[in-house]
Amino acid sequence: MQIQLGVHWIAKVCLREKFNIVPKDIDSKEFPAPVVQEHKSRRYAQAYERPRYHPRRKIGYLRHHGLPNNGENIVRVLYKLAYCTDLTVVLPNDTSVFSMGYPNTFQANLTEDLYGNTEGFDIIAVHARWDLEEYNKLLVDEAKYITMLRNPVDAFLEMCEENPEVFTRFYGGDINEIISKMKIGIMPRKDRLGGIIGRNQFAWNFGMNDTDFENMEKVDQLIDHIDKTFHLVMLYERYNESVALLQKLLNVSTRLIAINNGPVLSLSERVSLDADGRKALESFLSTDVKIYTHFKRKFEELIKNVGEEEIRKTMEEQEKQNELNYKTCYDPNNIHYSTIVTAETGIEMSWAVPFKDGYSDCSNRQLYTDDIKLHCEARGPKKHLKRLAAPKAWMLDKLGGVFAPRPSTGPHKLRESLPLIVFLRNRLKYALTGAEVTKIVMQRLIKVDGKVRTDSNFPAGFMDVISIDKTNENFRLIYDVKGRFAIHRITAEEAKYKLCKVKKVATGPKGIPYICTHDGRTIRYPDPLVKVNDSVQLDIATGKMTDFIKFDSGNLCMITGGRNLGRVGTIVSRERHPGSFDIVHIKDALGHTFATRLNNVFIIGKGTKPYVSLPRDKGIKLSISEERMRRLAAKQAV
Image 1: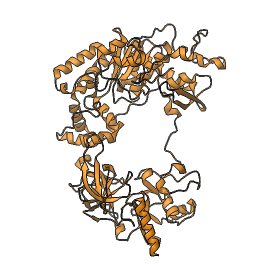
Image 2: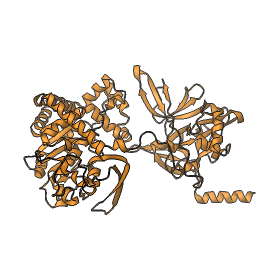
Image 3: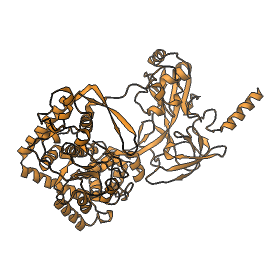
Image 4: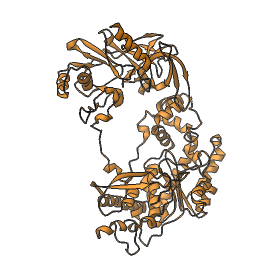
């Protein structure tokens, strides 16, 4: 397979001639063909198609956003068809994110830069806005057009889940907050993220403008146009039946069409989406809902016309072929290394392919690697951490061993936490080895936020209070200006509380309001004035909120991420950038000003008075020359 990455990310598939996968002197036999070692791989592609099949050419697949797994499987089916029948494909270098003409409609002339003309293509399967005339310029009039739809509510939730941080910034809240506002009549913004992703995505991809969504006459005209133009509209939720219908449309064998599909999961199960929430989203996506409802009914009629028994038999054949492909090709203990060189950049890329000997690496890699990746990837949580990959803030020496302690799953992220073993052994020097740390914690001597922790890898994080009753010591994990967790001793009185940043404000079942904090806590019935990015003072013994600090100009804050990690200053102003990162400008005690992202700002005090004691440098970062002068002054004073 020859992949050329041009200016517009278009590639051409010249399959058999390039790799000579199917020698003309070898006849097609049963798949797979266990013959002589050097000839096994050459039977792979030809065995897909028997002479009695005459696969259809000229296929256009309109891809939509919000259709992972099953939507991508249709693309791989079409690439297999091209692979085995010498078809020419408009093929991107990244099959998951690719567009031609966005945010405008599809443009056929984009292919001219690479091929010098706009004719001679057989398959198009790219993300694009629909334009029949432009598609026909490449595929001519006798082309068959197909697409796949999904329940618009689930598709919208899927797009929100693909990049939740971007969507949260764009819409001003996560999906639960958006739905809560919609229930009381506050609709989210109707423009599109990046000019592409947003409301009524299906209708927009079919070429309808945002201003026409409320015009029911134009919606009906669009549905009529899709009905007349597209030969098959598949349903994401009924993938197996859709593929059975696709097999009949393409007139291909089960060997070609069979691809291991993943489970269809409804994202509405992962968010608090009740009947009212779904109804509100359906109202927001009314145009897509109307399109989906129409073609869902048409799909059911098509199943009845073809015959449910025939569809069932086709599905059973595909399932058997999937099992045969897996048993025949897959061998996790036999790794082959494949390489490819991009024509434009000359960069060589290589990867490992776990397949049995005798099967063409190019055919297996291109056609099967994605199909069985669920079987060949490591499963379960990662359990090791190399020392060189550990956060630099832990200050572990490079020659102290190959591995570092990996923090257990807990309230703080791996790179934003400090395992107890590092704190006790490397910082306090209360132990020399990991075994000694285990003996300490198993005596139930160490408390984090008032709870005994016997896991030596427990991830303590920012603002956590570590108590050792046997030595009457209390520590608060807080950053110094170098971005490291300082050994900051605090009094017993201060150890009774901590500050938590509010990450989420929402309403739960039965209308109970709650907030989520940066350390994984959920606090019910908070003060109604508490909003996201505020800080709350938490009583550690009771777990209840005793006070809160608003995110306002003039309040004291500490930076918890970025290049200014550990610096302390007062908020000067906040720049709002919808769809991007809000920027906060801060001034420290010496008058130095700096800026950072909103997510990195943690409020620690009202006005200039901090609610918690600060480490030695008080969060004031000095330049290299200022540090040198301070060291010289201290040396002269001695």
